[in-house]
Amino acid sequence: MTLQITLMQTTDLHGTLRGYDYLADKPVDTGGLSRVATLIRQCRNEQPNTLLFDCGDMLQGSVTCDLLARHELNQTGAHPVIAAMNSLHYDAAAPGNHDFDYGADFLFESISTAQFPFLCCNLHRTGSGLIPGPPAFAPHRVLERCFRDTQGAMHRLRIGVTGCLPPQTLEWDHHLATEFHIRDMVSAVREEVAAMRKTGCDLIVILAHSGLEIGDRAGAENAILPLAALEGVDAVLGGHTHARFPGPGALPHPAINVETGLIHGTPVVMSGFWGSHLGAIDLTLERTAGAGWRVKQAVPRLVPTGTPPNTPPASEDPEILSITRPAHEATLARIREPVGETRTPLHSFFSLFANDAALQLVARAQAGFLREAIHGTDLAHLPLLSAAAPFKTGRRSGVDHYTHVPPGPLTRRSLADLYLYPNPFCALRVTGAVLRHWLEYSASLFARLDPDNAAPQPLLRDAFPGYKFDVICGVSYEIDISRPARFDDNGMLLDPETRRIRNLRWNGRRVTDTMEFIVATNAFRAHGIGFPPELGYDPTPEIVFESPVWTRDILRRYVTTHSPLDFEIQRNWSFTPLGGVRSLVATSPKARAYLDDPQLPSVEDLGDTPEGFMQLCLRI
Image 1 (cartoon, rainbow, N blue to C red):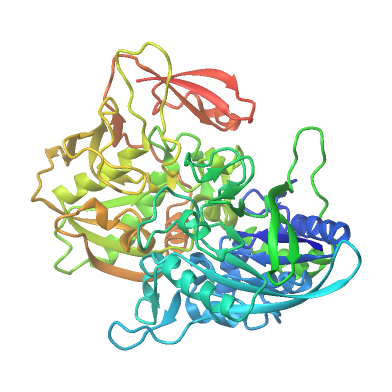
Image 2 (cartoon, rainbow, N blue to C red):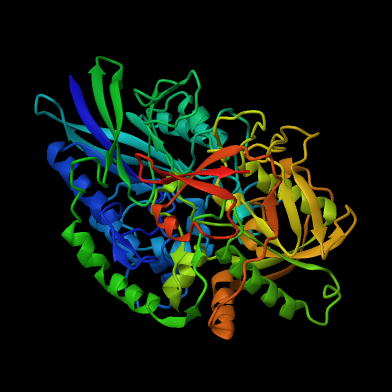
């Protein structure tokens, strides 16, 4: 006797409800829950035995979500993300770390209208001492569903579902630390699985807002590998890192089978981000006398919503378009409001390998805000620096994922394109030693170049995210990429003897270890991202000023005051010359309009890659 069941998954939607790019103010033919909905309905038509889950980060990440959180849209009723998910009859969801970005109260208010449970077993309310308080969400739910077997007979199954999210959430959203306690995902899920098995569950599914990394250290951010190894788990649905699995790019490990989608023999699926794919695991269950139901076969797969070669994209579901239309139209009206003008092109096409105006504009706005805030205080005597990182740098996110604001009018849309996230402002007091440490970690973006190798060499390390590449304005420095990186992608020390940062100077003076600075940045960076404990900062950077004001609002104020923008890009960092070593880097084809930028190293256009990127050869 066999049953065929399909588990469907979305993850990291980040409020992407439609195929519309609000930052470019134009429709796009990929992504969005409206397209995923079409695939969901197709799957249900083909397979009556289905379950639908989400693995978190659905309420933050789009312009619409930002405006809703700030009550700048006249929205009534359910949050449009939840309303759309209700219409698709989700069976359960897990929260993601970014779902807390607007505050826990906003999250719980938003999901109060959900017609499906939100599950998380490792997040607790604050208890007494080291003892966690009650769970913040239901730790698990046993879903009872009737499914038809291959002979047409109906069977009632008990499906146990639990969720989890990274312990680092309390560092990233530091305002949660007084209200919540987060346990290690693996140990919490292990306990929950055992409890569900005791109740006689036929199937156990894990909704993990977590990705893949090698290792099984306690408290890991990405714990899919050890979660899949837990006894009693039948399927793991993951996310968080925006990666896709099964598929190319998975880490090499004997327990990971990229072809079959099995990890430690357990089916795993991660369906990308922004509705790029529908994840699915096709299960064949077999019932044997006295042993109940067991998984006989599992086939994880990804169904794209975009445009594979020679096939059209999935159509947008009319019901989801109707549900989201009021929020969509209100968002368009808001983002088109004018705020100023720029005569300087602002883009991120070269942000990872040259000085650029977009980052320096953000840095200037932050510095001006901080200068005003500390005027007349005992911090005002410190040299003032400002750190900014690019958020849209293509790479894994695709050829269209770049900031591009050409000369002309600036709108609220332009500012959201320049500063993607709703990060509050923050300032740090650091020593020269910490500043150098900070820049060394940032410089870990780059691969090591061999000056004796005449062949072109890749410039960037694939796994190091662009948003961790902080450029610190107010000092000047060189990055010597003939030296090995000091840190790995997660901040672990690789080589304590190496140094890439050279000629670090402030106001023409060499920066010493004991000099002190105040650095404008954002709360997301100051409270953990960019300062993992493994970096061993000594002393630890001190937060000396915090504001609930978003950096995007600071940017708007600066643009309004200084419009029209027309400034010369400062050359505050550069690569140490390596005698013309050739290095390869990819960017948007739209960057061809700016190849005469004097900030660029010597550059050669090698044409477009099969993925649509423009390939450049830099001489360093």
